Length: 322
Length: 250
Ligand SMILES: Nc1ncnc2c1ncn2[C@@H]1O[C@H](COP(=O)(O)OP(=O)(O)OP(=O)(O)O)[C@@H](O)[C@H]1O
Ligand SMILES: [Mg+2]
Image (tube, rainbow over all chains, first blue to last red; front, side, top):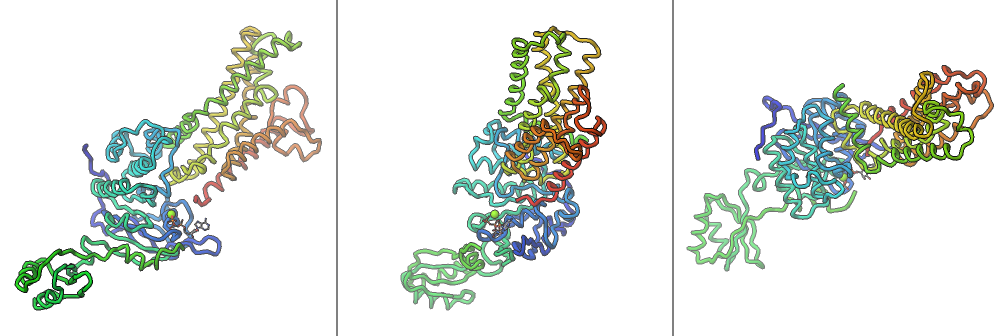
């Protein structure tokens, strides 16, 4: 399978975010469903839009794509306002909003052709390219009503990618997928971000489902921004990794480790016989030597990661539905 | 223009790829043939019909098969907007770099094409069956009548297709749209002898009445009816457009 590079010129410098949300607000009646939401998404990023059920994720995405009116604030896509220059802004966007819906009595291919006819620059070769990218060859000429949800999700992503968007917006793309399907989805989104070189915004109410693929998460609750959080490869950037060392004699281990210069013991858990400490990779050989010299038997060494899920629940105050 | 043609192509494919697409045309053909057979066998004034052209001119309008063509055109096209909402595909349609106005207009164009197709099908079915019954002939003047009556039949269908189109765009319900179109076409037969009624849509929809008898109500003429119809259709389309363009799509 060969993939061509996106043939739209790349933005020089890349200062301009692909998506810019500026105090976006939606009021329905007297209720404020989305309240002054601001965040950016840049090229190459995969950003998660997280929030419990009813937080306003779908409403936010509907405003981004011009499906519903914005009460206050503005959405800029590729520098163009979705309100004032709808066509110029939306041309950069591919998306699935809520569920991937298609004409059930048409084949997957015919549905893609429908999408292709609504844009200016999609030829047959491009259609075949996205079909290959998402592995849809087998199901291509089956009627969509015979598709499984996982296949419809893929077809949804295929139609979203057709016109080589700069921004891919996916509302709960893992909804209804089984664990294997979720992993598969994650894998090809990462692949797409890489091969197509685009920005992706994925909404979800489950952090664990998108944590592994996002570079950043934006957390909202009751329509308000709660926090933005970069997801690094190993927790907080700059901080030393935290290690859990299981030994036979935790007290002796603690004394031996504390004698070292650059290592700090943060906690001793007597019940599990664990010593928790922070150490740079470079200090580890010395630490292990020191334990051996002190006659401490080491059973396991593991890096502790505070689960982002825990933090997420903390940010949104448990799991209650707004 | 090429862009717009491709939108129309999309809409036409959405209509024709459904398996149920064949039902209204086939029904129309069956009814046309049946009516011809019945008339030929059981009607006493068949002797007055000397050619297929005379038969066609009398049958293709709203007082003949044109009524069925109108009803079946309404049934075939009423869902063209509402179905997108019902299937959820309206989101798929509206997040493209095309204006909502263009999309609605492409849908209306497809509905007009469908209506035209139905009149042509009625005409073709009547021509073939009538030709066997009365002989494939006709004078030039008779064929001109056929053309005029077909055009009137088309206008009659289009009035109610446009009404149903608007109602479908406003209510997002295929059922309500069909109901509105059919109820409207039934009102065509009712005449209220009051002056205001000549400004109502229904007595103006069938232009063929001017050929046979005098005007249905005093002060009406074919030009008058054409203006009334144009105003109503413009209002229907403007209402549909205004609502479709501004509505939040949830
Ligand atoms: N048309 C509407 N009228 C009134 N309230 C609405 C409307 N649409 C959405 N809401 C309310 O706005 C809130 C946010 O809804 P939204 O669908 O955006 O949430 P969400 O974050 O996508 O949730 P989920 O995870 O369940 O998909 C909900 O409380 C919902 O009841
Ligand atoms: Mg949602």
